[in-house]
Amino acid sequence: MRLRVPQTLLFGPGCLADVPALLRELGAERPLVVTDPGVAAAGHAERLLTALRTAGIEAQAWDGVAPDPDVGHAERCAERIAAGEHASVIALGGGSVIDAAKVAAVLATNGGKTSDYFGFDRVKRPGLPLLTVPTTPGSGAEVSSHAVILQLAPRKKEVVAGLHLLPRAAVVDPDLTATLPPEPTTWSALDGFIHALEAYLARRATLFTDTYARMAVPSIARALPRVLADGSDHEAREQLALGCLYSGLAMANANAGAIHALGYPLTSRYGIPHGLANALVAAATLERIAPGRPERCAELAGLLEDESEDLAGCVRRLLENLGVNGGLAARGVRQEDLPELAEAATHFRPVLENTPVVLGEGDLLAIYETAWP
Image (cartoon, rainbow, N blue to C red; front, side, top):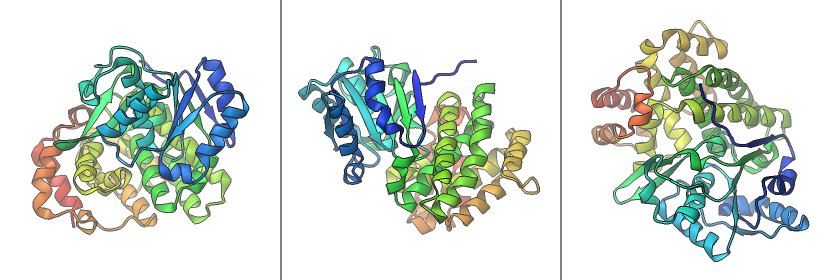
């Protein structure tokens, strides 16, 4: 068994203040804080810059990342790193920001274009030291060694993965999620919830990842409704952030599964937020793959405190309680597009091959059809 994690993990309310000391501990200098306009508008980037400069650390910020970043975002970020002669990177934001920053950090030292590194283990040299500070719960990007980037021609999701994309450190401060509106909070946390489910059912699951997944599933399922009901419930935010950190560690080491393969084309083609896209196909996918891991599906249902219903039913009820109603049709997906979406999903082989049952294009189409009405 192998567990790949950042060199340092910091967790707890207010730990953003510890970033300057952590940078010095890592020997990281002249950071570029990579973020997005929403995080900047919330004041998080300015707070971090002030803390860094007060500590005598020269730093600048760049807020040029957009949701579902494409190759251009990563390459413009790398250009900004070079122009400012930055020697390290701090990714402050959600999964989109962190993924763009990961790629930019390796482009800064390896050169070339993002497309040169699509796939696994194609990055040959370490990137700049990268410290991740998530502002959303659930992406898992802060602890993983891969990045998902949108290729524009043709328009599809690609993965850049390998040891050199693993952040040096991750700082998870639950207080940073307080400015995130309810819908993005829901989509992001559901992504984390599904990471834990898929990691537990994965072919690559280990005793390490099982432990994290078992802790993540009930923690997220209990904490998310509380956070949505009362955004000032700090204990619930802390439990949600911790559960999502656990799920990220599970996913980063066991990988995801078919739910993600089916979700990616929905985001690329229709712009459906990643976590929501996964949630829309989750129950139908779990019904299809349950025969491959019946005992584990039953265990997960038990963790959701309903052993009387199958796992797919538990997930459906959770989604309904969170207000995630309706199928793909309600999100603008056309029925005539389902075969094309199924064909696109077949290209995400690493996660499909990690799924406990073999799913061909016909199976993927059947799942979309179940999730469509």
